[in-house]
Length: 362
Image (cartoon, rainbow, N blue to C red; front, side):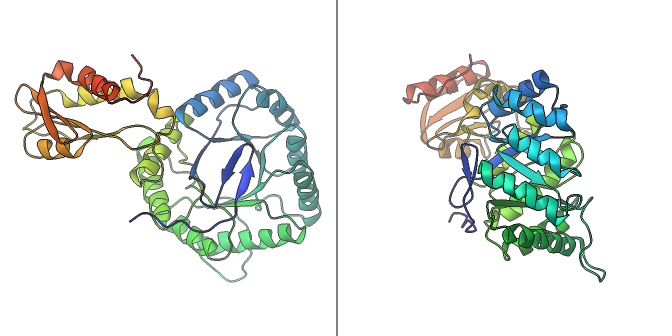
């Protein structure tokens, strides 16, 4: 039984549609100074090659805003201008080609200023992301309340203001710095509106802890059908955010980016360098993991005789190793024996011989 997605409004960001029945999209953010056009473009292109579909850029001043035009001419991916404190930067970003604007209700909340931004959004026909974070949310509720209620109350108040200007091309995010508050906020807001939701957990930390916390949070929400775009925020190079996001979506069956590799964790029964074999195969397959596949494919590389044969039989192509060699399975049938050194070339040849047109990095 598949995941039943929440029914949300469809919003266009550049050439990408989100919401509705559209696939959950992957977003990341550049970590360069936006006015450094050369390095920003290089980072955006690396993100796109890794599978990112939307890129957000920090707009700190008018130089950053003006740089959007030059960046836009050099990349082919929707760009979101991240605006804080100064509403005029949103106007400048729109004028220079931004595909979406993110406003933070915690620091841009004057109705007249919001009205000017919305007017420019309407003229440019681009959407607005109402992006709240626990670190900057204003307490709009008089009584002492939970962080999730603070986020939701501030969000819905802002939505009401925006809708008052007859504008509904809206995306919402409510990010706390812990799993439970973030889950509660998204669950609550998902019942109060039909706008698409951008999922994320803020300030998650380094790769190890950040991926775990993000996987728990995003995975739980996506399983409930909540979420239209996602970002895994890490204190690390942004490409790592994209790789983690792809794994989350693939693990839930929401997207397919390349063949799925099934491999055991190894134990004292493993007699081959399974870690090295798997890393080699991942390297060879890295080029095809950049684009979605039309159908799933499962590759199994197992290191012992306990679970190995069973997993290999269930895969499209599988190899189960014993003491010195392995057995190759093709769609559940034994084909022949394989040495550890021949494992990766054999799998690649099997993939090609199955009539697939996937480009494989040699």
